[in-house]
Length: 305
Ligand SMILES: Cc1cc2nc3c(=O)[nH]c(=O)nc-3n(C[C@H](O)[C@H](O)[C@H](O)COP(=O)(O)O)c2cc1C
Image (cartoon, rainbow, N blue to C red; front, side, top):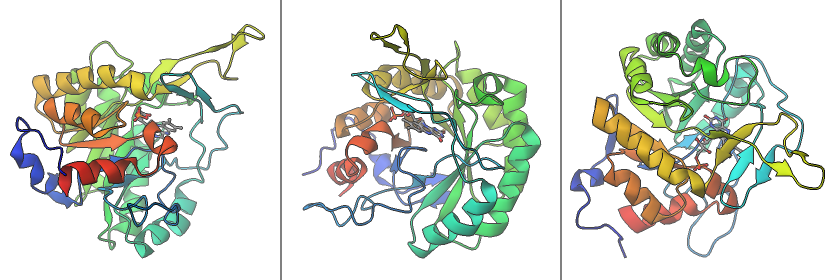
């Protein structure tokens, strides 16, 4: 039975269009929490054919130009009401992503948005151009999400994503190389005010904002009094993030009117409804997918079937 409340904008039942491109649905997986969307089809459930049933889009794990080994373990730490992660953007690099991952996503017809990160604006342009060349013949490739906010990398990282000029330059470079797919800019919540960052992204040509990435956090191991993560700080995600994400999404919608794909702390249909109530056009599910890979399928069924 649908859980659609009376007060919710009926236009959300229409197909989602971002930057002129129609996307398959409004409930997506968040970058880094569902791999690249190339495995998991065989996970069993009595209700669904696979965790991919009902997925609007898979946002792939962030890719960088060169491969990255990532940070030393532990990389994920359960903090009770949320998770702390310090993956350090481990990824195979753009070349392998294009050679191995893109064809597999195409073969499975998995709707995807490729997440990319660079250390300077030109790198975003280079990566977007290479992706466009490799993937524009596939209909299941819907766009790119620029990770302008990862707090765990030594170069780039959060300070990079707090500078409006840099944000505009990165988006502009990627936009030029991606004329016919959606361009999303993913922003950090680790700044006093997020609306100016969103406006800078829109000035650079972003079709939508993804908000938010993780909050910077740390935890202490009481057995030795030391930080649990070797890199000391990491990205905090999960249920505790929801009120922060709601506030940031609301700020962007109210102050800029730019379309927002919301992410942060959502794990249930009720959480997703809160994001829609503040004006989000779609919602990504991150940490909750690592607990239950059918979270997106269940929420999509509750609202859209
Ligand atoms: C283990 C892990 C890895 C992540 N990796 C990425 C990443 O590669 N790129 C990115 O933009 N966000 C990454 N994120 C952030 C999520 O996409 C999301 O923005 C954040 O976790 C908040 O949503 P959630 O509370 O639903 O998890 C990662 C989060 C987690 C928990």
